Length: 384
Image (cartoon, rainbow, N blue to C red; front, top):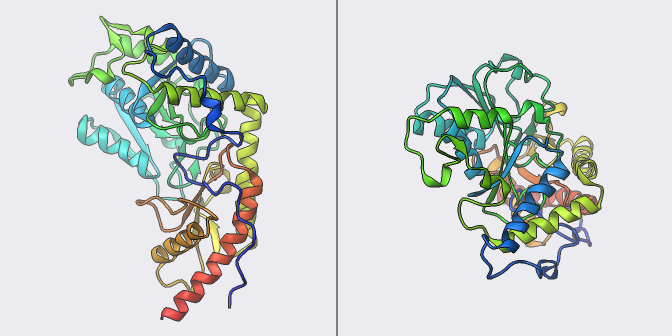
């Protein structure tokens, strides 16, 4: 018989990969200064939106000549705005090694009907950027949220590239070192590493990206929500807090609170270190237990935020059913919520290890993982 379940559960069992855990010090009282019932175009609203942009710049170290805008529809909206507005001016290369990257491929090839070069890798692997032509426009994810595989660095992106790099960095920003000189368009959403609320995206443009917007008009109709230029010039207000559509001022306040927490603990270096520490707890656990392993095959490409795991015990009959049973068992005992693998990904678990998660909770989770594995294996045997 399996041992009795652990007696202590994580203080915060929210290990979802989005929306992610709130900051450790979060209480609803922290949102009391939100500009509720006020127009986002009023001075108070514009000030808060501008503060969100400038605090983002300060923590992430975004260069002063890069534009940062708050845009609709989360990271998805930000990526779509970039692709619909900038692609088509020159040949394109689409890179995908997990489901969200594959979604961008579909949108570009089937919706925009661009004859792009498509490079893919299986879950757990990554495309070799040394084989990518960066004289084309290149679209890629930095961190594969559904595969747990990330770019280790931007060394293979040339400084003298002719094309634009469009990078979906939604589960990398605030947890991984993004080389701004290698990124022309960078997107992310509030609800990932900083644990903010959903529906708002961030769009960061290099001077090269701005030049593209002002010199190129796509052949296809452009929805109003994607338009970033007027009369051939960038609508600069978008990047000063004058949003395209109405934002949630409650969500804005929540993001400001999260940014203040990030700054108070030591900024980006500390945020990255917290994610590294959290992920290493799981990596070390896998090293000690041969029935569980990291989906990322190369340790250099392992994500420190969305850690994806697979069961490797030969006694498991149905991997998908087993993984679901383990995740359900942990949720039933309030040891972990929402840790099943993404629906398009290989069967297994996906555990968020971003900066808002406490390493002590990850440590407690590993005890529950071992217990749930043993119990579910016994139940499988009994049902056979």
